[in-house]
Length: 262
Image (tube, rainbow, N blue to C red):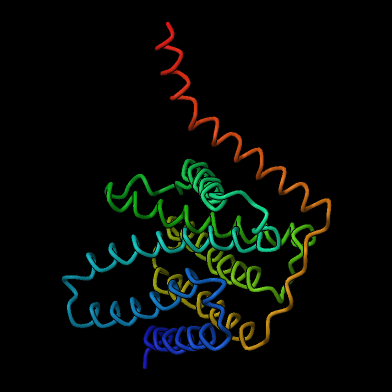
């Protein structure tokens, strides 16, 4: 069996193991989008393996479809992680706070998009250029989420035994390797090593899966409460965001009323 096939089948087995542990440990209750992402990845990898081997003419369409769905699910996972970190104070947050969190993640995504172009992408066809840029934006965003959670772990009262940081660590690791591989792909000296670089990327994802297996085998640590100062700070931010959103919603009505008076 070739190394490529070995990595493929090892990925199938570990993805199935992660999915089983998510079900056994009932992680799907607190992180449903991540659970869906793992199941989707398992099914899409199995189907992609069959399509690439049996229907090579449909490989490009399958790859594009898989990338679009992956990007949407990964965005949902990042929003879910940010929302899950706020679990100790979610009952005190105003309605629609999750939309504010999603908006903040989307805003960061827009900023990252402007800097996600790697030299050499401009030489690709437009469709591939956009596709590769979407993938790099997702990778950078996952790395930023991991760095943010790890750097603020003490303030957010989370540790390496908390599911949020475990998920972010796995995503961040293979995303960082993915960025390195994408940059190496554009280097002239690495043109003869594309297969090895892709194998390294698949291997990094396999390492993340194994890390999740080891992490999810263990019971999750009890979630700690925020310190009073941190809780007050986060609630203040949520209150300001809620007030701004209400002001934006009410502004058009106010303008109409003002015009009517005139």
